[in-house]
Image 1: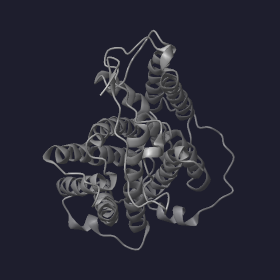
Image 2: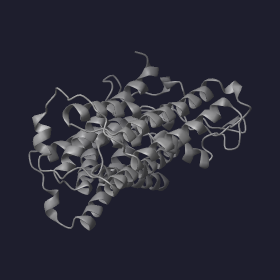
Image 3: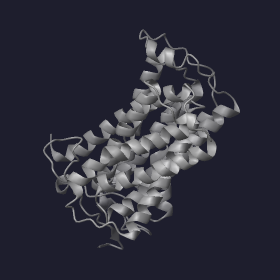
Length: 382
């Protein structure tokens, strides 16, 4: 396996980890666990988990934590951890893991729209690549609008032969699934969490140009987010009892999402953004949708509506139209009529030889470095 395939392998691992996180988080929330406490524990555990790796691998990296870097990490914690996760998990309480994952696939379209508005991504409507990115964004957003506002009849699927008694017992005392306005609100919150997530991609891209230390930046970000979420919990829950954990799904979920969903996933995504860019990271989100849909149907007895199925198909189709346009733009720059207004590309070097993979994917590396981004403006490389 060549080094060029390591970012792909890393993102597959991230999406599989996120799929498991959606399932265990839904089980914990269905038992009555506060989403604010869940998120606070997630970030605190992630920071404790990552701190030794940050010290061991990046203490000699030469990266200086300046005041500007701290400010960028602070805003990363607000958008990429606190705001994103609060909106997502509060929304997850009122919807299903499969719908939440499907709506998460609006992330590439939102990322492209924000990057284009900030002139970090080129929009060339005269070229096929530019047209594909715009059309794909419209289709993706259209699919995301169908899911909250049109449920439709239930799809008639055969019964799953798998029976997970633990999941049944964990949610036996849960309230009935949300419907009507509550379900719509849950879907809208998921979409808003994706918008916050897209802002994190933009901030992370800028920060990686001057601070290429993903373990350290993720550790600091999780510490900040843990403190922020603890404050939100104190304001919303107003009781110490909500922080109590037993040897049940609540403990298992916070450990899993803290170590895998934040610790490992954030470090791997930060590294992949530095090497391949945010749009490359976004393209793997449909994998999580497939895994969660199968698991939700197989062991959680999740019901799928026609509207959810139609919206999911449109979202995934729009996603890959955007990615096709991006790939054509990257592979055939000669086909483009020069660099348009704001033609700074939101991607890292295609050659990953200058980067080494973090410890989570290989045991042969001892440091984590990343290539500097090359940005092209008016035909000149800075």
